[in-house]
Figure 1 (tube, rainbow, N blue to C red):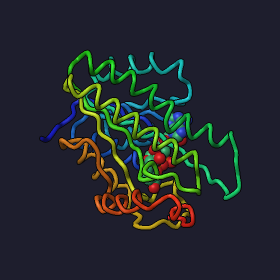
Figure 2: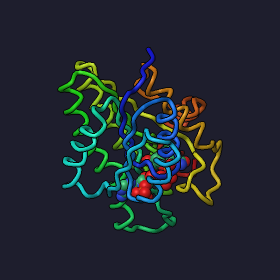
Figure 3: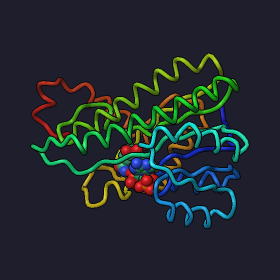
Length: 244
Ligand SMILES: NC(=O)c1ccc[n+]([C@@H]2O[C@H](COP(=O)([O-])OP(=O)(O)OC[C@H]3O[C@@H](n4cnc5c(N)ncnc54)[C@H](OP(=O)(O)O)[C@@H]3O)[C@@H](O)[C@H]2O)c1
């Protein structure tokens, strides 16, 4: 199966993987609504794309504003074939730090606001009996590692929410795709030493290939599939003594 998209919304579009997906979708002829807080970055991306990108400045934690913005974007785009929820934050958390403010931001941006946007998209696509919903989750959602409990929780929640949406929506011809990247070199990971780091172009190409295929979910790059199979199967009593 191979899908092309006439219209798309990318939430979390102003840098990193989101910016690269917007650039590639627009270059392929898709009209893209690019959503994030930094208007200046969105304007730069729209100017470089030369007409196919519509910028919308928005903080995803402004839940009350989201339904009207979603409706406005669908009207201005002339539809919504694809929505990608990519917005995310991962503040640095020390080994013995328990900071509810940081935890709250991660759950709100990475998960709760994703549910706000994707609930709207799900209702729209269920009614039109077609469309593709994609969430950028992470390998981090496959296991609760000790380094950043709330980040892992946010991504595990996103993966489970997407699975449940898929189980609801597949009967209506709506696809739901879960993308689980490994480490990607972006502003989020600046200064971190992480294994098998890839660039944003490879990450965006891998994510878009999954959206265009018939896949329900996939790792980017695919090597993380067998790696995470092993990591998921390490017994908890051993896993807690490691930092993998
Ligand atoms: N980098 C990695 O290694 C990696 C690996 C697996 C998964 N991921 C996931 O990939 C996604 C993209 O991350 P990235 O690495 O490309 O990082 P990034 O360059 O920091 O991009 C994060 C995006 O989220 C947006 N965002 C953050 N808070 C927001 C808010 N309150 N309202 C609206 N937009 C908000 C940012 O836009 P503004 O700041 O302009 O609002 C930006 O466009 C995230 O969900 C991340 O968890 C990343």
